[in-house]
Image 1 (tube, one colour):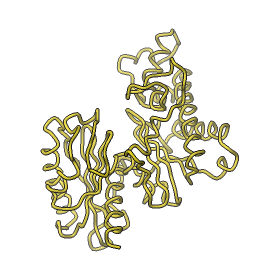
Image 2 (cartoon, helix red, strand yellow):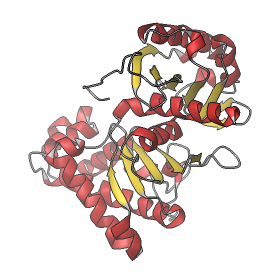
Image 3 (cartoon, rainbow, N blue to C red):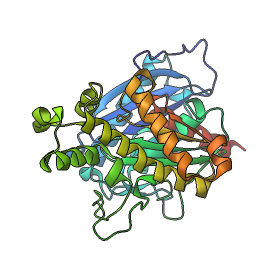
Image 4 (tube, rainbow, N blue to C red):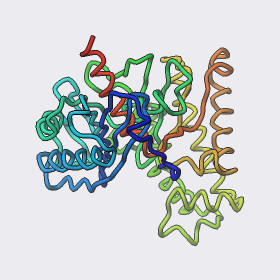
Length: 342
């Protein structure tokens, strides 16, 4: 999440205004943005999914009211609300089907529950798709007509935007880039979804830790050995910054696996840019290690992609951090409002 978050005042903002909600397993982020995607206010509440979807919807409504007050707005100033949630979903009918992060919300009509609690129409979207739209609208993808976003965290999420079209698919599974198959072998790594060979099984934070542990168990010498009890990608990155051979190898392998998935996206979608978001960016552009990771991804992509794509497709880090989800959800609400107004 950006540490230099700046808010535009209602006096300088452009109408209409939209509220965006980004639901995570631990916290729910709520923000209000103007017509140009500029944040006007932001807050976070606990998800507490065990209390159920109805309770969550009611607390979201209260949080939106607070966010509006912080922006010196009232409910009448916001025509639409955007809601992003994780898990498999039935977008047309506004239902979460199943989500490991929010078991208390599985099989719930969350869109309509929030709409009733807020008293506004709600645009419903997958959380990674919301983040993709945020980056497309006002983030690293704003200069392009189409982007694909890959979010690297506990799992690997994704989203594809072409023009103002969010690719959700016939069954609301469009953009699940983390579940691309990059290894078809019978002994391929197991993904958290229960299937083998998915990109997430190789490039997620969970996968980075598992691959590191396996190397240590195999006897690899590494400064990571003394920290293996509480191993995280951040610890791997810290040891890589001391030039630990295994830590650097793990990060380079992650870049290679990620590039395989990126090339598949490039060949199918041909986006203007592929944007890398999520918490596991090894420091991003702010650190030498992060820049090294990005350069390795770009190099591995160049080895596998068709020539026009190598020189014409940007591969870069996302820029909105943890704000991408609620900004993107608000952007999806804006699209719904504009389409309805036509």
